[in-house]
Amino acid sequence: MKPRGIIFDFDGVLVDTEWAIYQSWVRLFEREGQQISIETYSPCLGAGYSHWNPADYLESLTGKSYDWEVETPARQADIEADLERMGLMPGAQELLDWCHDNKIPMAVASSSSRRWVAGWLQKLGIMEMFDGVFTRTDGYPVKPDPALFLAAQNCIGVPAEQCIIIEDSENGSISAQRAKIPCVAIPNRMTRFSDFSRATCVMKSLHEFLNAIQS
Image 1 (tube, rainbow, N blue to C red):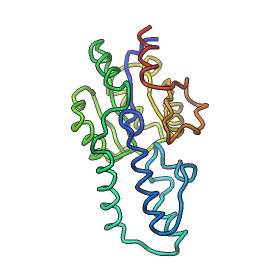
Image 2: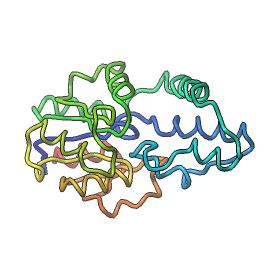
Image 3: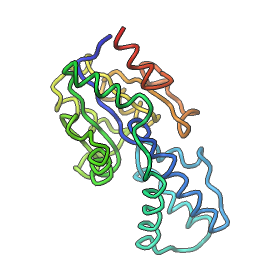
């Protein structure tokens, strides 16, 4: 089916940021003689730290208090350094160009901050391709609450059943289900073992998704 509108998650869908973010926590935990697995970290995926916070977890493991006003900017600098040469996920530019050429409206809905999401979209030169960008710092509750997706769907002005959400996380797929919008899940190395039973379908890549909607 050719959708009439597409809503993108950001982290892990358009840019492979989630791995760099996770690795920054791995390094911090290792510095403190601790470990954090992907399985332990997974509640953060698609939802940020609103439901479960690695900082609280580290303090519970070590019995120490940390100056997060120092640790967080240092970790952020490490993340941005890791991502400095990072481009879009494979197939993303082709999909965005095809949607633009076919006049299919697009929006981004992310549990991350506007500074993070819009900053990357601007840096990658694709901000203007989207009709709207919706983030937690715009006042929306994070996924799996459906509010971000409902705001994006309202922005592009397409009925829910004619939209497609592209997600990479279980929290995102739950959010899409609650918004009653079809969802294509595309797992990555951080989410490949997640439960995507609530997604409409699971695909291997954005290339596969583009081929499907072109046929």
